[in-house]
Amino acid sequence: ADEPAPAPDLTVVPNPNNGHFTVKIDGDAEKLFDISVETVLGQVVYRNRQAGKSQAEIDLGILPDGMYLVKLIVDGNVVKTVKTIVNN
Image: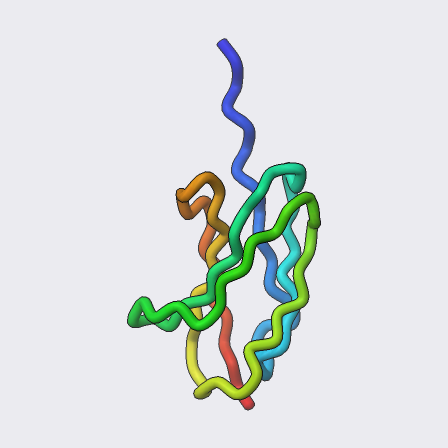
């Protein structure tokens, strides 16, 4: 039987940050995937489709300080969630 591909890993640097950060994806970056940033209450403040790139620069501008969830979404499924702290 075919082994399922390991889920890509997701790193946010720097963390904490001031709303400007880099998301690095370690794994199969050939796929289309979405990066979503949400508040802890589930409000989406950023969403962008990436294709074949292993990192993305994200500038959320002026966001309220607090915790945000950076999600890696492949084929509509959240495969990885990383918490990041925004501290302006």
